[in-house]
Image (cartoon, rainbow, N blue to C red; front, side, top):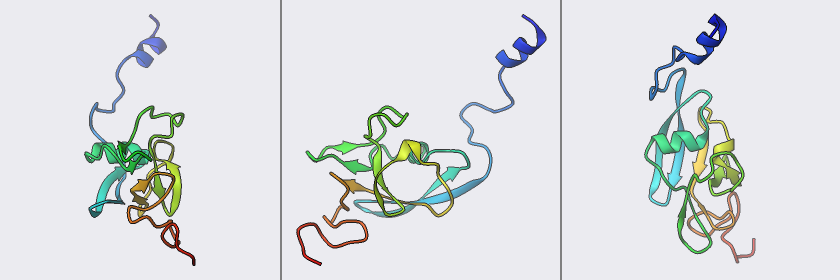
Length: 125
């Protein structure tokens, strides 16, 4: 193996299991309240939530909890309300300081049945 291939095959200077770089927090509001979640530059919202021990961030139409499944944006199981936008894929959204992540119920509702930025479903405005 030549020197270039050897260098490419050897472990990088990054340490496995250690989050490196700029750190900040994102706000995660589940059915029980809001809390700050640590995140690092370049990390997806899904990765930050998983690292903080959150395994679900939405409820499916049948009431079952959902979170990350495929991790590459194909399955849509990780969708949640990010910065007020329902059905946003957490695995495809880069975490950034001050980001707001909210639990989603079914097709994009908040836990109280209201539409993000709107009125509860079924009520006239």
